[in-house]
Image (cartoon, rainbow, N blue to C red; front, side, top):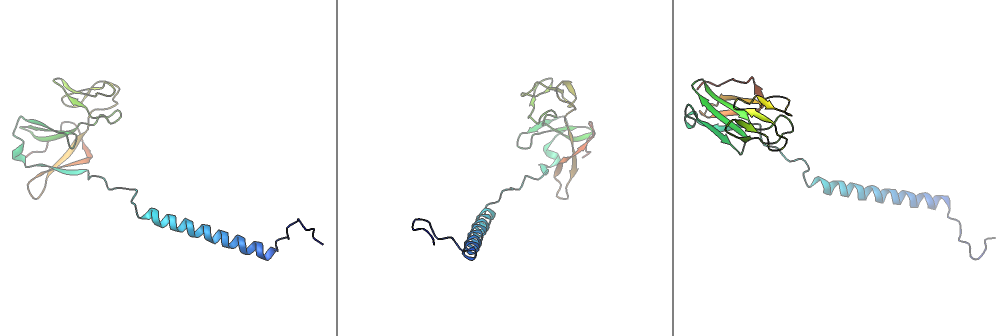
Length: 155
């Protein structure tokens, strides 16, 4: 006979029912939270590595123009047009143009005007990027495709 102050034991069938309902409720809450999380994108699209820089006529022979929105410098010589990345090959800082070439403001790397390393810690020269002419007549640069230094696109 149970004592007056002791609670009645919970039958096994009732315990399993409560456990099942609790787990079903938790699964429902988890599914709802997952559905709400799907409403907000966590991976945003990146800018394309390919971009246009303009018509060849906008870059007369002998000019050098920095395009800060794309972190590149466009050079036009009698050999053609070349695009050099302004992203330091050490840790990705944006180099600044100087009279002697380019300087990395973050870690002190120095580069010649052609992008060769003069002073480290940069392990390699600045990247020269592939350039071609689009069907609409504009110059297109592929920021993901590197060409050998000194490669010019003849226009």
